[in-house]
Image 1 (cartoon, rainbow, N blue to C red):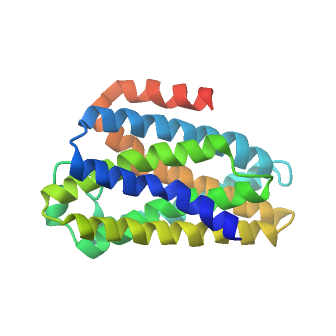
Image 2 (cartoon, rainbow, N blue to C red):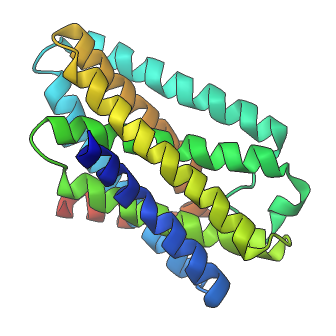
Length: 234
């Protein structure tokens, strides 16, 4: 279990790195968008080849599709609620967070990290952490940390407050990875497929709702080239 928590923390650690970079340097929005698109492509590839593929070995495609839908709806509803509470611009790099709710921004950032950490826990149980998935998580969290922290800096958040927020996300990432490991460890048959399908749906919803729109805002049509390029290279 300790190893699983460690991998969850490693995946979330690039959020802290991104926050430090945002306060020390000034990465361009284009650089952040490209890394975001690459990370999205890696996560999509990992979902397809490591979660869905495994779930289909123990459940028919209709069930797996339903499990994915449940996971996607769950994440989407949570994201929608937090957006209405003031977390909608939590990834904005221009300082739009100034008009949002600090608590909602923190919870929104925590919500974004849950699906990917949960999936990391699942892959550890399947024979070791997936390198492709881990790279996708790191590449998605790095620009998220940079973009969100750059905006929070402009909005007036002190560096210590931002780092504490990402530390809270890191702790939740440890717990989520352990939960994913535990659920699949105690599951078999359709219940195991449910854990995999649910996590896949939630992760895809996170990519679609929070990562790709941020990348597209800067890269426009080129976002569609970076994402599949990363997915094919995993």
